Amino acid sequence: MSKYGKLPLNRASTYYLILLASLLGTQQSALASKLPENHFQIHGFLTQAYVKTTDNRFFGDSQDGSFDFREIGANASYRFNPKLMASAQLLSRVAGDMYNGSLTVDYAQLDYTFHMSERARYGALLGRTKNPLGFYNDTRDVAATRPGIFMPQAIYWDRVRNMVLSNDGVQFYADNSNGLHRFSLQLLAGKTPIDENVEKSYLDPSLNASMDQDGVTTGGRLLYEWDGGRLRLALSNAMLKLDSRTTILPPGSIDIDYWVLSAQYNHGPWRLTAEYMEEPIDYQGFANLLDSADTTVDGYYLQGDYRLHSDWELLLRYEQSHYDKDDRYGSKVSTISGLPPYNFYSKLWTAGLLWEPTEQLMLRAEFSQVEGVIFLSNLENPIPSERVKDWNLFSLLISYSF
Image (cartoon, rainbow, N blue to C red; front, side, top):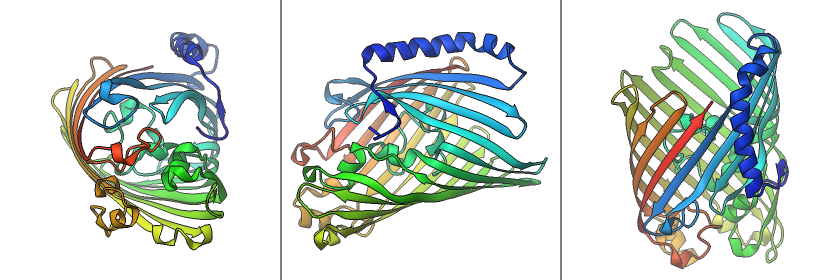
């Protein structure tokens, strides 16, 4: 959980939030009718998944079948005038042992437009804003916008989701269109929520690490679109430093530099998407005992989607992740750590089917064949010797939005 921005939420409160989201949906028209047209909007979503694995824990006790993946969100926006708008979203997310359903402020921001014309728009966001990383990070909590039931773990690791999701600070944006060409630039600076998942991912869980951010997170995304989005290209980055204290080692810091290169082509019923991530990690201090842990994590995926019908879609995705891009199958780090090599990489094939019977209702079914366990949470799989190299993952998801 984040160290700030959260409130305790028990099971009864979760049911209350579901009821609240339903009531907001039924009352949206009535609320909007009392305000100037298009000035006030309310939306929300409710998502529930089922996960079954042959081995390892993924979003709960998945070997026995788990329903511990649930997302409930409600958002509202109010436009004061053509240049100024406020928006916010509350989210409850259950994700196995990683996230327990605590109520979070997913984003809460003021959007001010400095300049707006037919071809260009420039402005700034102030508050808690979503980080524009890759194609999907800033919309990853909405099931209808994800490229599958789960985000491609090679790029969007759920085990450190809070760290890459948002920032408390400022974001500047600029959009410019010229004929078939559109350029979009977003730059960010702010403070990043750090939680237990991050602490147990970047340092061994046995060290009982405690982390705080040193300075601010900086980064952004440059996006190019051609012909209304037929071709999309993007380069994203985020940089931050974590001050770390442990019960065993002297204090130190961890520098993280996160890069994502993205490409997508849309043509008729086809959509092809590829993204590549590099994340140099530099350990400083710790009495120089972790100098050898410096590495560059990398990963990529390639996904094809085919729209069979207006209501049905197929997907096929392949992805790989490596703890060290120069040691792709973990042999060197395995010798140093004493852990099996498959702890330091993963390879996944995923096939899925999407059905959208209405504009508000979506159902997905997916099957993944997995080799390696690098993306698994240390909170859910704390004993490396019990992790299994080759395993399968089956999942179902139903989502309703309004």
